[in-house]
Length: 277
Ligand SMILES: CCCCCCCCCC/C=C\CC(=O)SCCNC(=O)CCNC(=O)[C@H](O)C(C)(C)COP(=O)(O)OP(=O)(O)OC[C@H]1O[C@@H](n2cnc3c(N)ncnc32)[C@H](O)[C@@H]1OP(=O)(O)O
Image (cartoon, rainbow, N blue to C red):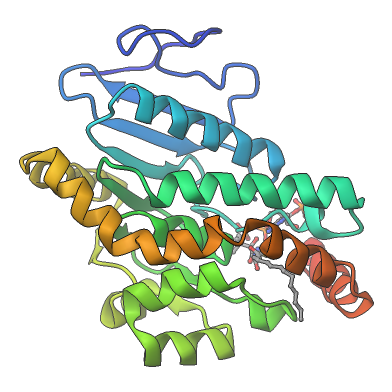
């Protein structure tokens, strides 16, 4: 039985089920029998990742870890889009402070999501470009509905996917496929993504998607949790350490680049194009 409760304070496992109460940017549902959490991104229309959404996600992930969550499904409340990636408005003519704060929260959120001891599955119920693809790739398993698009399309926007985005992709689809996909900024259909291993399964519809996500978690939750998490973090530690030990350099890379006139021009054109659609 799924129970969703509004609450204003952080409480015990059984008392809290939606703790972004002030903004509702993240809906958290916890199954009271199994403990499985469903984290639903809820920033209409397309879950673009601005500071506030990233912060709500980060808070949720900290909470789940503290509460010894046994497994989590990441999904979206939008019918068309899992996440449209980073909020372009956060990168378009920001102040230095705002840009730094934003990038630092992106790092925080990714580090938490990529390193969870508990199993995670992305139930990708819509398009998943750029930062949206990063979120999906940070989970352990990806299931996607048909006829949507996923990929790291940064090159096509005249920007560059940071090294840790690239590493995540390489870890999943291998060096050669990742190099080709990243240079081209290629977006894959759900079916193509399955073929190259960027997603693990396709689902027929949302119901099937959630069923398959629960099936994956049931299987994982049958494994000894400590051994499971040690192996997981072992596989991910090099990618994680690269960013954790190089956070300042990564922020500097972002700040140095995002203020370049050419990058601002690309962002401006792209935002205009999306608005005119
Ligand atoms: C050498 C240079 C080095 C540079 C280094 C700089 C480092 C930067 C690193 C950047 C890393 C990651 C980058 C990103 O994640 S950038 C974001 C990339 N995202 C995209 O390309 C997706 C764009 N969106 C879409 O393609 C579509 O919106 C969609 C997701 C397929 C959904 O389509 P839809 O038809 O359902 O919705 P649509 O009408 O297009 O959009 C609805 C409104 O939402 C606005 N919007 C869409 N995406 C974003 C976004 N990412 N940020 C902010 N706003 C977004 C869109 O403009 C519509 O707004 P409105 O209703 O018209 O006002």
